[in-house]
Image (cartoon, rainbow, N blue to C red; front, top):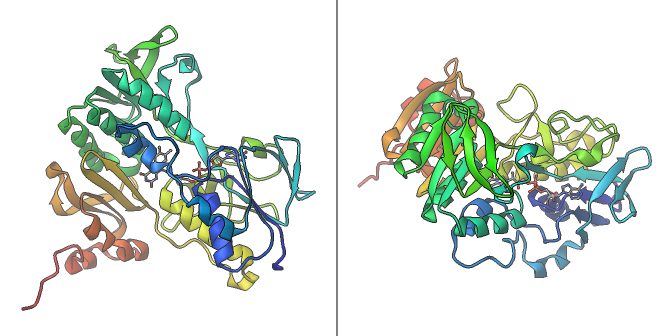
Length: 410
Ligand SMILES: Cc1cc2nc3c(=O)[nH]c(=O)nc-3n(C[C@H](O)[C@H](O)[C@H](O)COP(=O)(O)OP(=O)(O)OC[C@H]3O[C@@H](n4cnc5c(N)ncnc54)[C@H](O)[C@@H]3O)c2cc1C
């Protein structure tokens, strides 16, 4: 790629900003444009469901990913509050909602995802989803006037919101359609440990039951479950996952399947078009098929790969090799996962105790380690990273026990 090529990044969230930073750090000196629909400078989402929900003072701005004074050194043409509405690959042009057209030599799609919603519940003012800073402010306000919170969906985000509700002193009901939280990812044994964590903090956890409908006029007053139970409530949060933000790509020819499909180098089927972050459907180490991950670290990992590949000679390109990793903070517990477990995996708790919410578990298939999952054991989990990446033999890893406290020689 010549040094003066115009690179345009659509989406100014974590993955878009990280792509821009990486490109500059790796020596791209040509024009670099970052277009973001939100008016805020790039900000961090994890605090929205944790500290920002529970802190006393109303936050005046979202948690910035980069100090404002440090933008100048990136030499970015930053266009905030503008939405890309169409991609015309034949002309190498992106259309924006102010009517302008933006030409590119290389394009990076970094438009992330948005909360999955249930249209039938949208007219209730107190039914929320949580993705943006504005969502966080609206939810904060309702939580402070509430006594009871219902969270629909016991995934990672739903669990964090339930924990924040308890921290604010609310009665909380957590409703999950699967038989345990995170069942598809963690399987029944580890999923149960997450349900127990919530119960031990006083959350009313309802598993294996769907919400049938919500009653009330402009405000939801009660949630009716498919098992016939009714929950009287003041606030509802719908945390049932997210969908990739790809609506602006309709008709562009970019292959879409749950998100933007790309190869392990982050390149789509369309020449000069690449994808990073939550929007990317990509082969991750440990997964036989492409999939879309919504992990903070994957946003940075995919950004680094695409930035490198945009500047590299064809034979110097590199695929994504980082093992998927996520964390979640709920109550006083840090939940972490490395790798891609499958519900069929064999599970061994190799350190700590599940009941104490402090343990390390290994997932394995055909005797090979596929993933590791931990509560409140960050250092032992980190020491399994290479074993997960290499798919080490379970027996050999247990023999090595890298999680065990190191003996200090005297
Ligand atoms: C509340 C919350 C808590 C989280 N907590 C954790 C956590 O604890 N641990 C963890 O591992 N992960 C967590 N995540 C996930 C993590 O934040 C995401 O994986 C990460 O933000 C993905 O970055 P992204 O840049 O791909 O997408 P986004 O952050 O969604 O950024 C995409 C940006 O593109 C913009 N955009 C969309 N369409 C257009 C368009 N057509 N034109 C212009 N701009 C557009 C959007 O407005 C947005 O600003 C959390 C997410 C949320 C919402």
